[in-house]
Image (cartoon, rainbow, N blue to C red; front, top):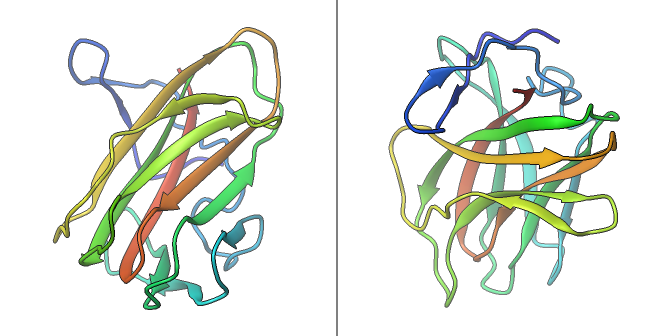
Length: 169
């Protein structure tokens, strides 16, 4: 599915990735939360919903809202299609609109094999931000395979939203 978002790679500086085909299902969230799995390891007190945006590139974002102090490791994830051998980049535009609390606050993205072996992890956002910030997790696979991509909120009492992109470099 072609996206209006054109990601950049960060290998030695910013350069345009020529392939702008998003390899995720329902990455625009136009069909609500279909194709996305929402999980919370500690309680059922996390709310995930789709919000409308008035943005140049995105019409919708998934919002993860957690107000209970026991809510940790809130995860939105998706298994991908079978990816070709080579370099890929998973990215998400993330905005944290309510302050994190807890010992290990933050939101980040991760890519793993379907067996759970971690292939890439982005930097962690630990504070609120007024604009969307692009997190990237570049990875390489040696054999064609499906991968599991995650957007994770590690701490309770936070609210964040994201728009995701997976591309073949």
